Length: 173
Figure 1: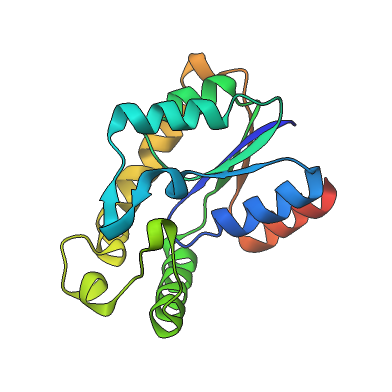
Figure 2: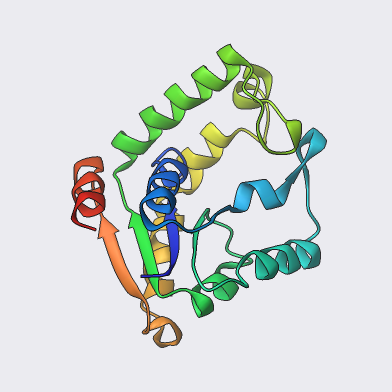
């Protein structure tokens, strides 16, 4: 395992696992959110985003975390392993709520200098909380279908269905 992509629903712990894995394997961590989000919650144009991701994946070893379907083929073609944090919504959604509450309370600075707010999380169409509730099942089925694509038969897939399974998997490395 030298080139690993960590995927999963919002709040599953992709970045947390990514940091731990990168430290354990002594390789760079690529957070797709950091490449995608600009100040004012503006997005990086698709072509530029793909170029940034390709550049970040140019090394011999890396850990990527994030769920951007537009660059998934690029990442998976170069990856040797996919770690899927396939937690039930009853696990990942409360985690997402706690993380959102913490970020709003502490005014934690995110990618591009952005900060979360209750306005965007409760009153906006751009709410990650609402997006997660609306798309969880569809995205899960889509990820399962993509992993079954013969184009990605080279990938080792670790489908972890609970935080305890993820902890055990990390410990066994």
